[in-house]
Length: 170
Image (cartoon, rainbow, N blue to C red; front, side, top):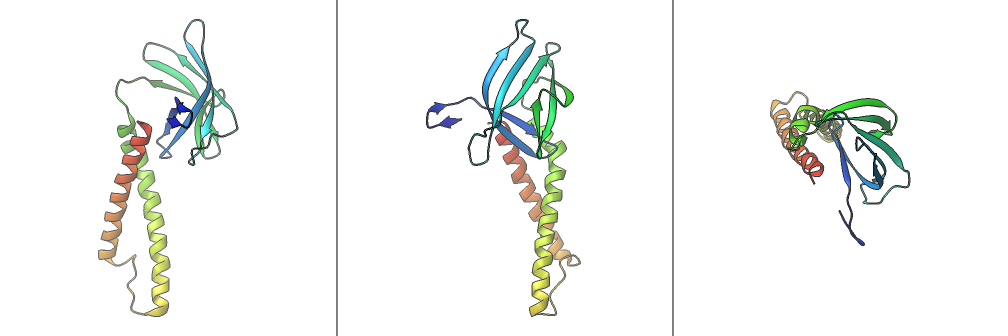
């Protein structure tokens, strides 16, 4: 990541079940003497590119040549690496799993949220139209409008999945 003081290394945590990525700025990183445990202290970089003030800590333990273990804790609405919480084991890969995970876990979350938001907006517009014109079509029963909603949700979902994958792979 580029800053006004040059380039800075950041870590990107992907929570594909919530369809979110979190960028963090490592403050300290140490490797144990046996080189099996990586300990790090970090701060979250907000959506406005401001670095938070709260320090978070985590330990990443190497179990085998490709298996690692870390703890996940919930902080607000995000799940972050931590020294406490649920222990999770994962396998290191040579290729980014972001596209696969986004399709498997995030697509339904995004589609549900987008459909709900769009239907709410349409319902409000329908109520306004009814006040002016009693012959306004109900968006929940109009098949043409539902097809448009489905098409819009699919295109928006595809775009948001691409954004999620690219932000994870940056």
